[in-house]
Image (tube, rainbow, N blue to C red; front, side):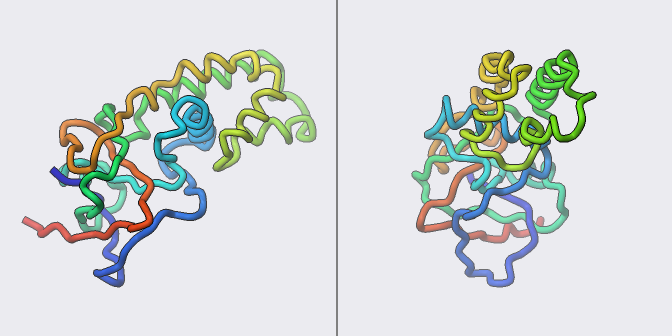
Length: 199
């Protein structure tokens, strides 16, 4: 068993990679969903890795190839065998997760009923930050609390999404090829990549 990802080859084959210091913008999911997920994590799962600073990979070579949006090269991710990583039970790319429709639907229904969409831009400026990229959990909480239509569905947004409930923490050496995406925040030792020979 191993952890694999598909990406462009690094310029230095011996390069060691470390935790991304800045927040990573999501490529495959809306900013709204990413913000709600980070908010839920900060409240209910603070011991889980943040998607904002994680490396994403797969638990099999086949999944790495199938899920990648780039057609480059498959690498094995080399990290400590006892390193705890998060693995999804959802065995599809995250862009297909049911939470995307759920969260969007809850928010759209709430603000549509409030007439928010018809207001002038100055009345939308503070609340619309919920749709901005890479809010912290605390920032999301502040927006929700100060925006009555969304404050009314706070508990639904906290309890409804399944993403974090479908995550398990396992040692990197024990990831399951039959389960979904793997992600982790690199430790101080970092990680390296080893090319997987083409068959």
